[in-house]
Length: 204
Image (cartoon, rainbow, N blue to C red; front, side, top):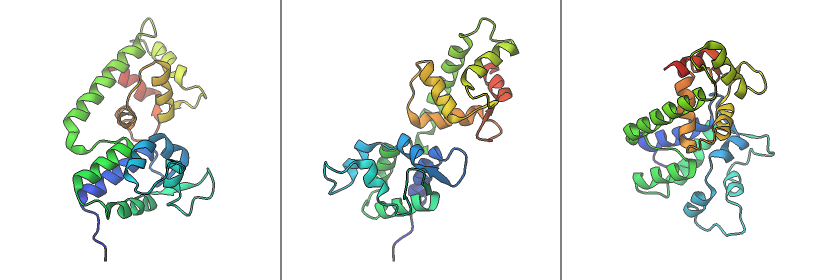
């Protein structure tokens, strides 16, 4: 009988999963997983992988329910896969390092450093956005900024819109910080940044 995951390991697996499941659907798309997946780091940790096997495909092969590019991976299947991986890794630190490097997330032990980094990014991004208009304190000017990134006129911004925003502004950040920035602005946790939330962020 296998031992259950300890709290530290399970928290790391969930942290990696929630970074992709931004809308709390309980399942994530292949596209979302691929964006966070680090193939080089995965290949380092998988014994017996030959150079002819593409790392991401090797990962997907562990999920028999995946039959097309539209398939989803559930939270329970994601946890189950990492439970199996966990069996072969004796040290907690090694397992945490694996999750961090393969899924581009960081453990909560680094909360202070993580929080400082996010605060710095939020402050710099705010000033960059405000610099794109002449009078950023006016609501109509804030609306111009918002609309510039709401390209499909949804009246809200998704995490993909924020990612596009950062690319357009030439402000690269590590993917592990993207969901933290999004959650800071999305105060009502609706998985969508509405104009009022965006304006309040600019006013901070």
